Image 1: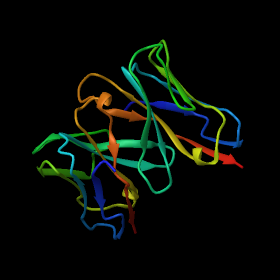
Image 2: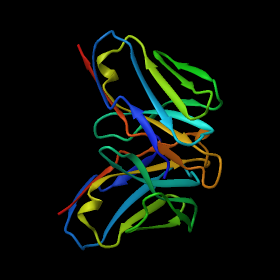
Image 3: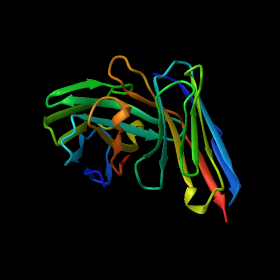
Amino acid sequence: GQQLNQSPQSMFIQEGEDVSMNCTSSSIFNTWLWYKQDPGEGPVLLIALYKAGELTSNGRLTAQFGITRKDSFLNISASIPSDVGIYFCAGQELTGANNLFFGTGTRLTVIP
Amino acid sequence: DAGITQSPRHKVTETGTPVTLRCHQTENHRYMYWYRQDPGHGLRLIHYSYGVKDTDKGEVSDGYSVSRSKTEDFLLTLESATSSQTSVYFCAISVAGTANYGYTFGSGTRLTVV
């Protein structure tokens, strides 16, 4: 299967700090997505990116689709305690079954 | 919520027994997916369905089978459970097979094989 390398694996930050995480792939994707997972729940879509170079914001979240189409990053500004969770990147090809491939996740802890 | 429920939420079973997990949706979406989530691996696709009786294998399909006899239900069966199948299983739905329409995930089933 596709290999998506997500970093860092975990982060401990103070409330109010900015956060940055990224995802790289060995393959080209046509769509990049970022999900957040709270404990005991399924992932919830945060941001979707559809073309290379695209920069998209959703409140305090900003994500970019890398020019090479093999990477993406997610920034969270002014973190708050409810940002705690696991963040996953996901890439989708537009060939075959259009399946999503997920990164290994970044576990974020926000210290009040 | 998006109208997707998984059952059971938790299950403990013995090695060698068959197990069936159920995903039920009320959205009438065409596409349904089964993923497993394991530490260090993220979510990996097991099987998916693109319509009633239309299914296909994902990345980690060995030891699993699926059935979809109705639009609203997608069943995942572990034919003979093994300890390596201890995991959290997520079902997802999509109105179309592209991420543009979003994948909505259920709350998961935590399966322990002892």
